[in-house]
Length: 133
Image (cartoon, rainbow, N blue to C red; front, top):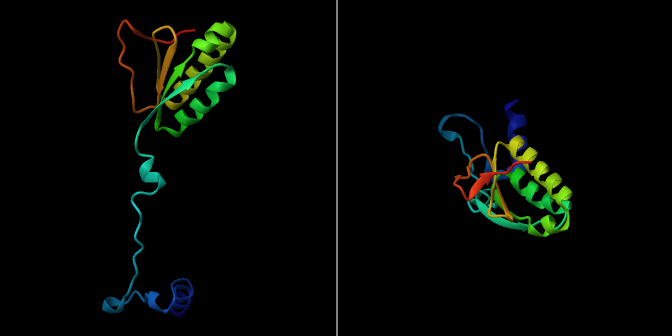
């Protein structure tokens, strides 16, 4: 098996990638990982505004919330002025998704809703209240 291992490592790493696993003769190569990769950049929280003019406009905010790095601020005024039934449907969808991800949802003012992932919580005062049906 030792010779097979050497052939395999030589195939993938070339001659300079010899690893025998025996005492001081063991040689290894290390792969440097870029810490500024996409995964590292995603560790920051994004607060992103969305305008909801139609029920389908909540999909991008829901997708971002499911990723877990976005706090969504939704301006619901256009949909509120257009169709209250669609607004209630959109709010129910937001609440279900929020419950599924363990997040928090609240309205502030008459025209805004904030939805957070599980690591964040909305501080409630008289101006911010939990979104109800």
